Amino acid sequence: MISDRESPHGQWSTSLVFVLAAAGSAVGLGNIWKFPYIAGEYGGGAFVLVYLFCIVMIGIPIMVAEITLGRRGRQSPVNSLRTLAQDEGRSQAWTIIGWMGLLTGFLILSFYSVVGGWSLAYVLYAALGAFSEADASDTAALFEALQESPWTLLAWHTLFMAIVFAIVARGVRRGLERALDFLMPLLFLLLIILVGYGLVSGNMAAAVSFMFRPDVSMLTGEAILVAMGHAFFTLSLGMGAIMVYGAYLPKRSSIGKTTLSIAGIDTLVAMLAGLAIFSIVFSLDISPAEGPGLLFVALPTAFGNMPGGTFFGFVFFALVSVAAVTSGISILEPVVAYAVEKSGWTRPVVAALVSLVIWTIGIGALLSFNLWEGFAPLGFLADVPRLWFLEPLTGLNIFDLLSWTTGQLLLPLGGILIALFAGWKLSQPSLREELPMSEDLFTAWLVAVRVVAPIAVLIVLLNGLGILRF
Ligand code: PHE
Ligand code: NA
Image (cartoon, helix red, strand yellow):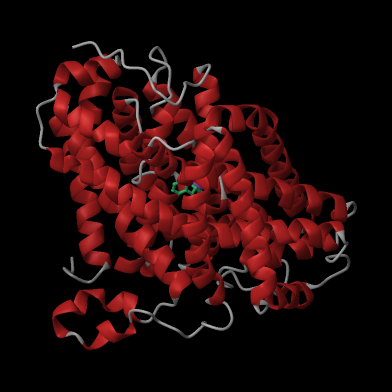
């Protein structure tokens, strides 16, 4: 059965454009902000090792599966799943993958936009010379001052959502293709400059040993779950973002090769960001377990004390903001693509409505750093004996709750379902048509998505949530 459906939303002009767009989705705050801070919190080496293992064993096979579903379905995830289930004579229940993804998109973007806002704020701070000659306590105070001001956070959150909205409203291709061509390489260059700075002026030896010398005693079930969840988050997997980009992938492009490039770029950026940040952390009075502020405390301290630091700081945070925006777009796109298909309304109208809802949830996220810091919306569940397994969620504020439920729950669950649907429910001829790779590679992939990845993810989920202890 040859599938020659065309996407109603347009197509990428080449495979390279797809790789850039998907890498634009993958590379974002997950790499530069979240990876270093969770690696720091969970003790470094062992966490990083588990994370890398998950990228290779789980992330890469599932990315192949997700792109395959997208390219065959050619629509928003919900409708792609519906069409594929129909084509292959499978139950319509599989569209749940698309629905869950829509929900996950709303939740992720609402807190992502808040952090994207921090990054935008830091573009301005850098331009104003706010870091110059700052020590770690000055930059920590600067970050704290931002967190304590709900109105300032709201302004930046609003700006971030407005930018993402404006691009998605114009359509992914028109809005996105041109910007990515030079911004991604520039981000790379800046990170390399920062690693260079860390080599010369920071403590790179300590950074390398922290990141790559595993201390197995740090490996709790929770740490493994966070590392695995982050593998999904950082590769944009499990919610349809990569699927919807796959829907715009030209028929002749190789899914296997593009996946390897995307995952490779994403991992490299995370490692460079980690090395840059930790080499600075270990040469200053900053704790690697500083938390969400790590990036915003460590790097400004370095910028404040290096020649040309104001300029580099400005360019760096501008690039982080761009990386965050290109990821934000890919989180919004599946929702908007579906709503356009469903309602027949124009893209700008749909994008505006959806953005408004996400912006509103984001207000809860940004208040978690000040007025609502101690407010745990699920706190009441702590007393419900039958829901004991939700215990890890009962102490979290809105921001942490959004981050936890998406990263540690919804993305891995979505990933399992994507793997199972692609692996077991698409017919062999359909799969072979999408994945014309060598027989051995194909078999290895099939085993990964049919068995290895779903079981591994399930075990880590159950264990990390304390439902089963292994
Ligand atoms: N991968 C993005 C990052 O690392 C975040 C993201 C998650 C994007 C899920 C799309 C979907 O910043
Ligand atoms: Na990423």
